[in-house]
Amino acid sequence: MADHVDLVLEQWRARRPDIDASPMGVIGRLSRLSALFDAELRRNFAKYELDRASFDVLATLRRSNAEHSLTPAGLMHSSMVTSGAISQRLDRLESRGLVTRAPSETDGRGVQVTLTAKGLKLIDKVLPTHVDTEAQLLAGLSTAERDQLAGLLRTLLESLGDKRD
Image 1 (spheres, helix red, strand yellow):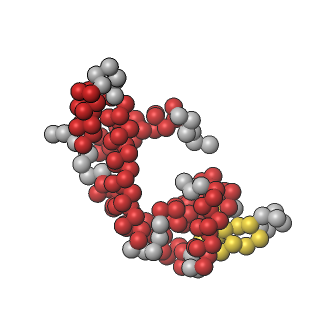
Image 2 (cartoon, rainbow, N blue to C red):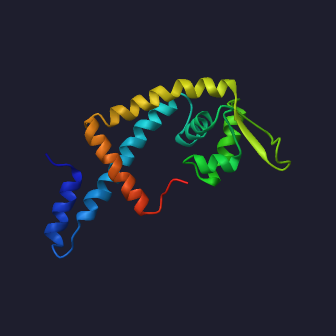
Image 3 (tube, helix red, strand yellow):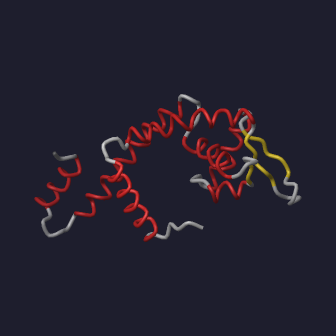
């Protein structure tokens, strides 16, 4: 069996045999997988009128602590959402009644973002379908292969400076 990336690599070997294009085998496949994964995840999130960043904010609040509450900086640190997207997402989520923003009790200038009961209900409804979607996307791999792939990807991320704080 061969995939599209195999075709690309064959073409490069034929046209530029002087260049080792093998890194394209990894990066190209990761890029194609990312696009396929993103499309499926977006489809699932759309059922709940969410996008990936909004889901991530809700999920981060849900998993972070018993109060389901963080500062905007804490959200940025704990989530996979960029700083520019946080305030935009919070505005949207707040307008839907999924989160609240209130002055911090410990820092007069700070703000706490908290999951509302409605937000908690939504993320608890979305999360199982999200995990099911991810499992379906990885169904072509055995449990051992998934574990091996996760380990290899962790090693690569760490080598590029992505460390747990």
